[in-house]
Length: 281
Ligand SMILES: Nc1ncnc2c1ncn2[C@@H]1O[C@H](COP(=O)(O)OP(=O)(O)OP(=O)(O)O)[C@@H](O)[C@H]1O
Ligand SMILES: [Mg+2]
Image (cartoon, rainbow, N blue to C red; front, side, top):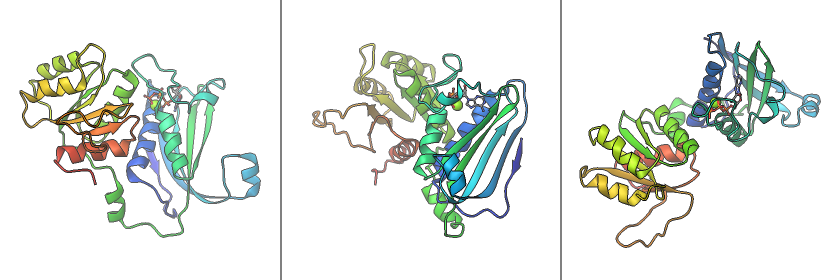
């Protein structure tokens, strides 16, 4: 692996946690593309684009940009696959290996930062992903500022993720592992109980879907576990807003409830707040 940073790079306005996600997803894809090994080259460069360039690249804009390139010497991407790689859930990896959400996430984040992506790939030669982010007029922000906007991290706490949708479960588990948590996964309430018992009934936080297949709901699962773990923290998730008036129980978005789909930063904050016993701001 090589990292070749440009020493004279203008600053960009970026969310540190999201930039980590971009780099991580591109690097993991590069690794997957090189099962026999190879070269991973990450570099940065300042680039200026004029109107001529914009005419050829509909997503590009004129002005000053920072280019982050992630290059591999892997299998490359077939021309018929290339137009689909940014689609959510598009994957060429075998079932259970890829959710197809990596590049969709990258695309979303880069768009959100007013940037765009370009891909160059040769089958059998390798692939380069170029991420363009607008240069900021300000000089580099002090490190303190960037740290405060970074996603709050885990300190090795154990989180049990109970979610029946495999793609969402894998995604949540991955986000949490990236943040530094130990993650256990279960596809139903019943499986969650099994996993929890196998793990010596030691879990710091339960992240559970409210509605799951084999009869045991998220609420019932949490009640069962709480009888053995009095300090258990719970965050419920659902695609729908739950009945907020359930007797003696209140769902508070961002504190003990997350509406799906949630983004990595929201999850990171909710989990940290919940573990620390804090209300969401
Ligand atoms: N560096 C690369 N080299 C070759 N193919 C790639 C590369 N990056 C992405 N692809 C192709 O694009 C597809 C979509 O990538 P994406 O990251 O969105 O999903 P995934 O890697 O399959 O699954 P996930 O990232 O969710 O685990 C991959 O399945 C692969 O076919
Ligand atoms: Mg991927």
